[in-house]
Image (cartoon, rainbow, N blue to C red):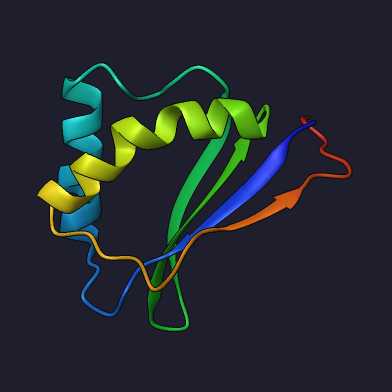
Length: 93
């Protein structure tokens, strides 16, 4: 079952930190990764956010150990733990 994972950056989060983290993930061969179906980054209400669709919780959990050290290295702080919800329906045109 697919899941939706929503990250909200702390107030110190910026597009520059996001871009640096994405470059580091790609350079490490860690992105895009197995199980990731969709990734979108945006600003809403003054907060930087990332939403992702994953094939399963297991695939997301397998990626987390690769992601978290790179977030820390690039000074990315989250406003809290990611919100994770089960996807009921997804339409891909």
